[in-house]
Amino acid sequence: MDNLTLARWQFGITTVYHFIFVPLTIGLSLLVALLQTFWVKTGKDEWFRLTRFFGKLLLINFALGIVTGIVQEFQFGMNWSEYSRYVGDIFGAPLAMEALAAFFIESTFLGIWIFGWGRLKRGVHLATIWLVAFATSLSAFFILAANSFMQYPVGATIDQATGRAQMDNLAAMLFSDLSLSTFWHTLSTSFFVAGTFMAGIAIWWMVKAVRAGDEAQAKNVWRKGAYVGLVTVLVSGASLVWSGHHQAVLMTQIQPTKMAAAEALCVTPPAGEGAGFTIAAFGDCAPGKGDENMSHFITIPGMLSWLATWDTTAPFAGADQLNKEFSEAFPEMVVAQDVVLGEDGDFLPPVMATFWSFRVMLTLGIFSAVLALWGLWALRGGRVSGSAALGKLAVLSLPMPFLAGAAGWIFTEIGRQPWIVAPIYSTGGPSVIDPSMATSIAVTPGEVVSPTYVWISMVGLTLLYAVLAVAWFYLMKRYTSKGLNVEESVPDPKADLDDSKPLTFSY
Image (cartoon, rainbow, N blue to C red; front, side, top):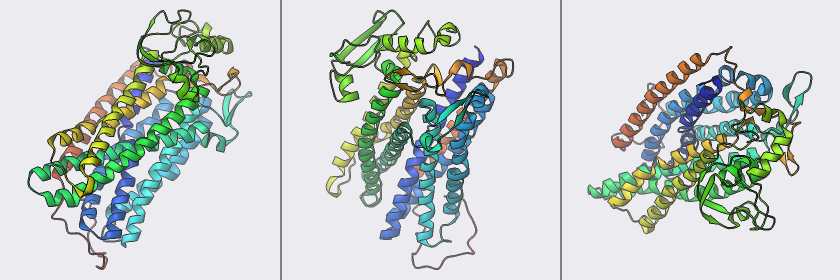
């Protein structure tokens, strides 16, 4: 295995693993802020206990997210030095903004929130967790802006003297249509994940409490936590569907090879016919083979064109048309097809990986939707439920949005291939004057960093991440299973602040 393959595997492993923690941190920080706001406004003990309970889980997740995220940026310099040399002046800007602004805000105020119980006035202490929630979203915005540049490199040009990409419009890069759409979709995903997490755990405890005869705790505490989570799932789920549709429409316009692969569309439909949506497909879209190597199962005629344009007869480019356009625009990549393209003139990403990751993402989201509908029905009118089946669904649903999010990122990143920075596409075809870069030439050369070193780092990081995964699961399960800390006294809102109280990290 060469440097390119190994570097891609390493980045894929570390990125997917890191993204396990990211959406939960973003979404749960805001939900914890809401729980604490309810406590400050109402003074009711149950909101305080829910804040402390889910706040503890937030801290565990945040700590693991920081550890796993540090590796990400180092890889650009180690494994992808040619990429860093070419677009580092652009790509580094939002990463620097994320570190200097967003990360410092969230880490600083999270520390103040942890140690500020009983030392800060309620309103001031509440403001710290809201600043954490704001900063986590701000952090996501800068990171997603950097990734969106790789998908749609606006706001930059090529410096002919140095041969490097240079930024000429920061605002255009940060606030491109794709950047804003991706940010909207990712925030929706984060609240969907966090809502499922909160609802799943609260429902499990509610069912357990009812079956143990403690209906008071089930109704006064866990029903409230479940309700907040379920409403979050319902609202964010609707936003997720709409933002996903908006993003797919946008990607059809600016990155049509990804969407053709996502639908296994090997041949452009005849004019006036429109493209159908396929439920299942197997095979590949080899250049010059048409649909010969592809088997489609259950295709809804015109559905794909309708989803992209609201018109069932609208044209939709297939692999044959796109490969021809890209081959004419980038003939040097066709010549170097042994290191760039799988087959002569094949500019589509791996079709089956793109096709099925998209459908896995959609399918796994159904679990949370069913939990939200069933849960809200079971809790209607102030009711609580001791249904064992509902409790099992709550537990089963917990990992599903995490896996759906991972599948979504696999779809996003694999679907960009064979580009690490995709060329801008318009109705006239792909642009050759804007910054674009093939993945194969972005990797650090083997004579600089040998495949052996990449092997060592990949195996080492994977083993380390496996250990961290076990630690994360153990801690989350342990503190979830412990339930509420009923022995902890609820602070008196009128009591004086105790500055002499020793600092403690105990949660």
